[in-house]
Image 1 (cartoon, rainbow, N blue to C red):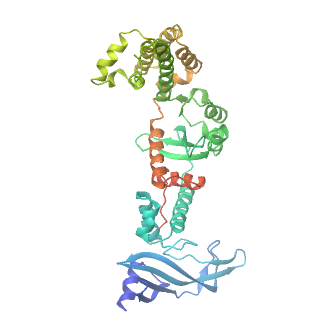
Image 2: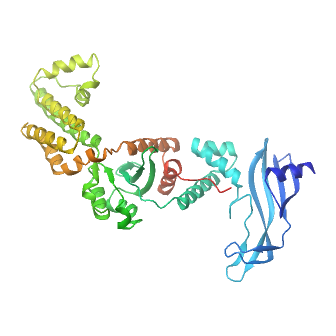
Amino acid sequence: MKDIQLYQQILGLAAPWQVEEVTLNRKAQEIEVRVVCTERLWGCPECGQRMEVHDYDERRWRHLDSCQYQTFVRARVPVVKCPEHGAQTVAVPWAEKWGRFTRLFERLAIDLLQECSIWAACQILRISWDEADGIKQRAVKRGLARKARQVPKEVCVDEKAAGRGQDYVTVVARVEAGKPATVDYVGDGRSQESLDPYWQQWTRAELAAVEAVGMDMWDPYFQSTLAQVPEAARKIVYDPFHLSCHMNKAVNEVRKAEARELLAAGDTTLQGTRHLWLYGWENLLEPLASRFSELRRLKLKTARAWSIKETWRDMWASFNAQEAKDFFQCWYSWAIRSRLAPIKRVARMFKAHLANILTYFDTLLTNGPIEGLNNRIQGLIKKAFGYRNRERFKTDILFHLGGLDLYPSQ
């Protein structure tokens, strides 16, 4: 009798539900709590029309463990036969419809799945991999259904490698002041069609609320945003870090070409110096700084390319877009007269996209938030030892980084 009262309180049951019997199976290390329903009139779960119980459905749910024993709840759940909606199983207070776990068990499982690998969570919870994966998928589906339909003011777009070779997913991050960035969307590939569905979930009138879209210089993302978002040409912001990557690549191309020329003449000056030229001047520490100073005094082409690259970085200290534009004109004049083909190519590319480079000074938006999320996605890949199933990969990203309300309702 005391066991019945105890589990009546533990499960938080009230009329017409009550615990009828508690059974301990020491051999199986299980406790089964049998619950009965005393009500004969029930409302249809769809329309609420009240009617007599038509039948009962015997069901069993896994609950939180009682000490070292796995605990299960068993009940004959009433089934009503609605003239409009047919046979309907009524909702039970301890679990969601069609669930095989109680709400409290799923909450614990979600917490564990967020903190450790799915394998480790299975070992702790004593459930199968498929059961854990089902909990995760239901949680994401639940979270997406609850997610408010709100157009973000600022977003960042980037691709993330999903496997070997040219295998990518498109990731869109929602950026809000004072809040951590969250993944708003994950699409297959990195084409224009990969990003279009994200914008198409809203009307053009709603998308007018978007203020800034951060991205690298990947043209399919640019074209998708340009086609879908009103006045996108003045809202797209090219990320300063990715622009610097283009400059670093140009400097490295100059170094490789010059190193080959010097080596042909028996000069090994530039051998083993690749990483030196990729440093910012403020990051060079001894003894690298001393060696680098010696290299710069040799008046190498690579040193000239490095100086142009470092001067480009100074543009981001401008106070506004007009000052940055004036700075760029001077820098471009120097770069285009440098007689260094890789530097000239990048300078022309920057000039062609200058309008969306200067938008940074109006928004101060960078791709930093989404780069941080990409690092965390890489952590998920390592923890899972890779993903063979693309949909599970996308589900995991939203489960861990989507900022969704994953828990079952109480």
